[in-house]
Length: 219
Image 1 (cartoon, rainbow, N blue to C red):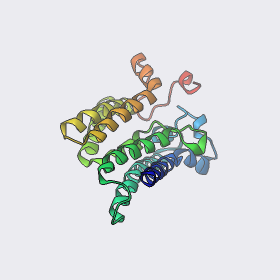
Image 2: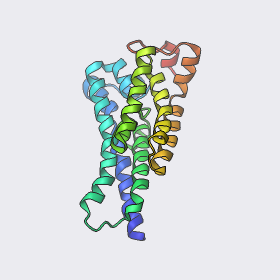
Image 3: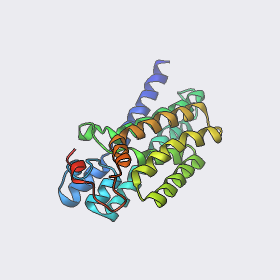
Image 4: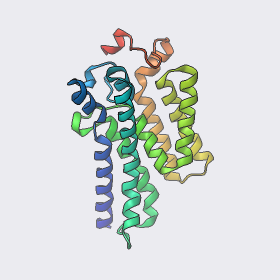
């Protein structure tokens, strides 16, 4: 049991460290020599990169952040696939996938490399979902796209998408660990958008391509 727990812990640590790679922060440093946490919303995610660095860097950051989520799931599934006689019981696999997924999501928003700051975990969550259950990931992406097309507000699309994930997990009959992950990660993403929710309710949340109000940038 000690060996199983040790290997499981190492997989979760690896998933966290993978999620912690500060893509948006590195883009700001490399392209403009700035700390993107001191720009716009202060997030290292692709939306703030878009406002600060432009479309190209934002797209690259979005893709890499999503791949971090895919990689976290691949770590667990790859371990089981490559180990002929698994050192960890197969019954643990769905739970390890779910915990590794949340570790990556947490790592993106609380990166050890940049003093436990980061983004709002939307892109990494999407990558996790696409690797965990492709129909759920595509469904959440579809909900996000529809809301974004109607409102042109990225944060609103992210929040509604986070809510939709739990519904999709249940409707598609996914394992209990996946359903629990969807609920916990969805709530976490929503909590990461508290300031956005306040601006949405106040009618001051910028649409895509617009800058944040000056008072919001200083918060």
